[in-house]
Length: 145
Image (tube, rainbow, N blue to C red; front, side, top):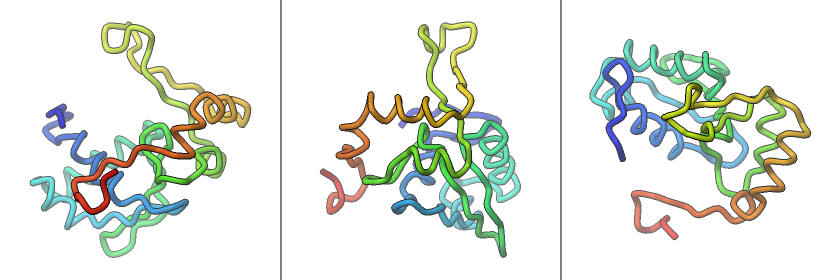
């Protein structure tokens, strides 16, 4: 995993931690204290980074009680195996987020397309195999394929 850092926090590690918590078509239960400890950061800094991801529509915060948040994840960021990204995208009107043609060398390295059911249908059809039988990567040998 690369060490891309934004304001000091390893976002790749944060996104990986959120992705590992995905289960079916449900929000992630995100314990800020436990995750802050794993990421070796403060809860305050972690909350700021999650807010940054929410602001940019990578996540939707759906409640936060006693330090445990319910986070819905934009399927362009991650999705649980066997889930239909169109369902999650429709529920929260997630935009489709992708890299620009020249990626980081582009004037706009990230392109955000507003939510439309037609766009998500095209995304699903173009990547049907990945959504229906995705590769599963895991740090646990028992769950890796």
